[in-house]
Structure formats: C-alpha cells, structure tokens
Image 1 (tube, rainbow, N blue to C red):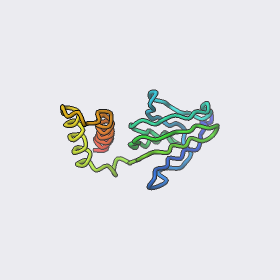
Image 2: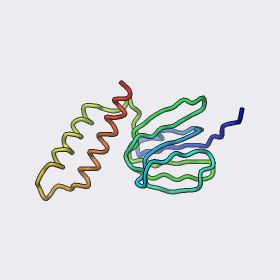
Image 3: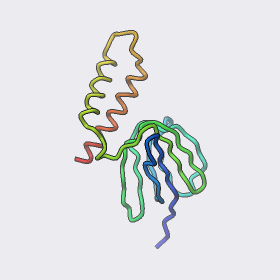
Length: 138
C-alpha cells in the first residue's frame, strides 16, 4: 500500500493556538473559492473566507471547525492559517448564532441608508457557517 503523505497544519487565532498537527488534507473556503490542500501543494498565500474547515488526519479521521476570516500560507511542508476566529462544533453558541443571523437579516431588509450592507452580509455568512456546523453536531 502506498504511503500517504502528510504535512504540518497550524491554525492560530488571537485567543489561542487552535490546532497544530500532521494532516493528510485540509479543505476550506477562500475569497477565490473552495480549496483542498494535499502534501506538496504549490506555495500560496490567500485570504480565508468564512466557512467550514475540514481537517483529514491519519486513518481517515475528519474534524470540522468554523473558521471566520483570516489568511492562509502554504509552503512546501506546512500550512498556516491565521484566523480571526475558530470554533469546534461543541464550542458554538447556537442561540447567539441565531440572534446574529436574525440581526443580520433585519439589517439587510432595512431601508436605512446608514446600514453597511457588506458588513451585514458578512455577519449573516458567519452566523450561517456556525449554524451549519452546529447542526451537523446534533
């Protein structure tokens, strides 16, 4: 059987080192679209968009987390994600995410010219990512 190649993944947020370890594949959303990373990926620096981070480790074990904005750097044998916020499914406050979704939806429907629509859309996306991941957990 062929040996699977692994690489080092580090996910860092302002509050903590969220994840560090050797993995076989990482999947996440960037501002340019979704990306899957395997060992030997070309070097790349990109902007991370709100979405679900899927980490595939040894023995096909997968972990999922909500990653809400940041930057990613891919080098020869390492991927580093600097994220504004990261949460495992059991860390998500579902009630807070529902309230954030409702608040963002109200802002988007508002006719108030002072509402920052881009910010409201981003808040809606973040809340939907959290709710999607929390829903998978239950």
